[in-house]
Length: 101
Image 1 (cartoon, rainbow, N blue to C red):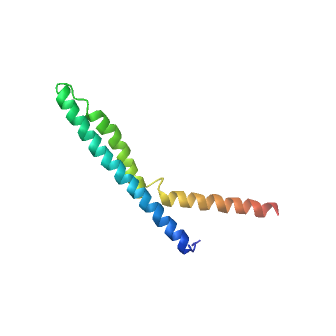
Image 2 (tube, one colour):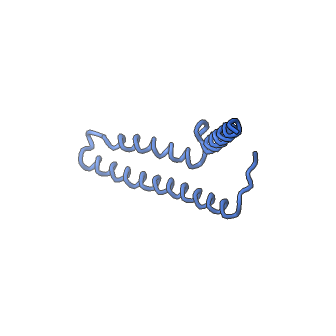
Image 3 (cartoon, rainbow, N blue to C red):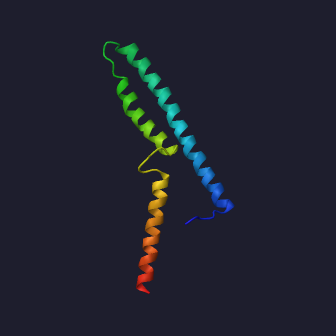
């Protein structure tokens, strides 16, 4: 069931997509800056006890999943899955309405 999008809908989708990508790159930039700062602080204050890799690892996992979602590499719960599920629920709802008539 192919849907024909209006120009306004396509423009809104493009804006939303750019906003998602911009958000990811903002997250990635903050990740690099703050973890670089953590590394410097760790090495200057207690080089014998390394702790900087904990926020690097934890935040890094979040950045990876954010990137996977934004660039649609989520094989199970990506945008295609969301759209299929929404379509499935809408069709099921329509079928129920028709049964009650």
